[in-house]
Picture 1 (cartoon, rainbow, N blue to C red):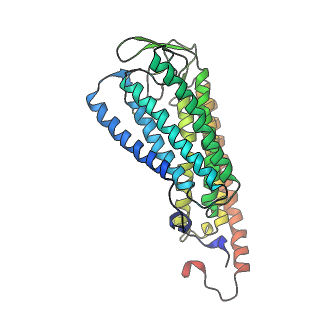
Picture 2 (picture 1 turned 45 degrees about the vertical axis):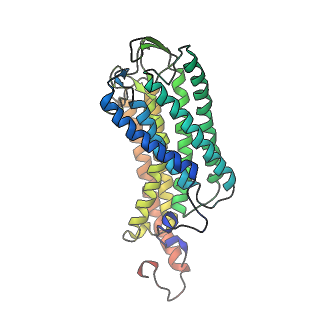
Picture 3 (picture 1 turned 90 degrees about the vertical axis):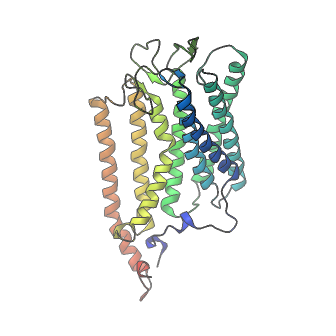
Length: 346
């Protein structure tokens, strides 16, 4: 019997000897979860607003994002792998930088002003912006080093390893998209107390580049723009693709005992690869749509065509994997010793 046709969740759930979650990242995850609860409570009692949204929405979104991402990294770097000391230190850098950056976002919210693109010359904002702008590359580079270190080795079963490699690559791409916001042009607005503030850039790309673009009209909860292209959507989708791919690997493993063609690890790994390719196409389409100044809620024919192509390529890839799964099953049966018990009947 080969490992190709052994559907199992063991690599995802077993505790290997000496394996433990990355403590600094785990502590950061817990701190961000507490921050998210604090922001939800603060929203009830604090009615101050920036660009039409509560001052506590931005730190809430950052806290939730960091809970997801730091928790994922803490789990990833716990797998035995080459370069483990390097990834441990990079995880620590990521955790410390996340605390510093999100901390600045929280303090600026408490001050009733902007954390991003704020050009005000008061001492706190000037120093804070330098720290913040230094931290963003720190997050990116630490994540990149972890991604490169893990991408060339298999740390767990094939499908999950594929989800980790491709998911980290998409996350690096998604994180890099944050830099595109810096070229959207200046905005002139006010802080929570009505004082004028000039922002060096914004999240929204809109035809004619009006003086204020962010916060003019937004979707519920997320407040993503419904009047222009919002780069935050592609940025968000890219960052959290890794969680979706890991969940997909777990779901495929759960289905494998009852869906015969999913039993081979190779088949499930190929499916994860196809899903990663399709998801990358989705993120690229969302970015293209935003940079054209088009709201995600109002896709034009070109955007719908691009989405259709992404869906068609993904469907074709799944069909090809299904066709190849028959050959994989024949190979697995051919190498199984005579009289061995099928893996699913043990």
